[in-house]
Amino acid sequence: MLKNKSLAYPYLVWMAIFIAAPLLIVVYFAFTTAEGKFTLNNLTGIAPYTAVFARSLLLAGAATIICLVMAYPVSYFLSRMRANKQHIMLMLVMLPMWMNFLLRTYAWMTLLEKNGIINKILGFFGIGPLQMINTAGAVILGMVYNYLPYMILPLYTAMVKIDDSLIEAAQDLGAGTWRTLTRVLIPMSAPGIATGITMVFVPSVSTFIISRMLGGGGNMLIGDLIELQFLGNSLNYNVGSAMSLLLMVVVLLCMSLTNTMGDEDVEGVI
Image (cartoon, one colour):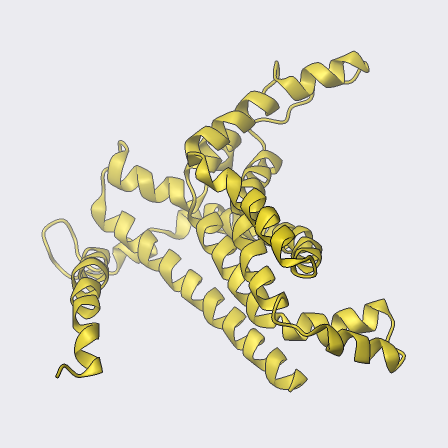
């Protein structure tokens, strides 16, 4: 009879080949020269791109906050619907994800460009044309549109487990809407908030398709820099690996922070 631990061996082999080995390769290239000698110049050479890293964190953070503000009430009302309606609404939330990522982004290019649909509509009212494409706002809009479902789904999963009797008890004890939200709903949905923030922030900070198609050359993000090192004219695997390693560290720090905050909030409620 096989032990339960043996069932994990295929997954461990998969992790070793497709996760651990690539990470080791990235670390190796990040700390070596083209000749294979140890160096720290790859990491120190990232300093001129500090503004790009800061812009990536700022835009990704803004998109994550907007997704959280938009998704929270949607997830709450979704979790309080009848079961059959919940299934329909969940399908509608996930429906855009069935379409190709590039096609969704191309659609926003058509909407936001100078001669696009939005500017044509505004033209009927004597407004515009407005410069909407190739801006930081367009990049944030693309992030919010593409990653909003990743915020709604974990929030919904957390909120659907909150018993209505807890909310009714808080209201019976005199808690208003704001106190019920801050003392009951938000703390009890903290795991969903932490998961949603991670699932939106991580792809937003590392994206390069959205920034290239909607942001133009003036809104380059970390993902664009890394792509240039591996596929562009620069073609420097060592510097690209150093950038990837730094981005990985930033992402891991953000994930650990959100997970810690979620655990503390849940313990406080209990």
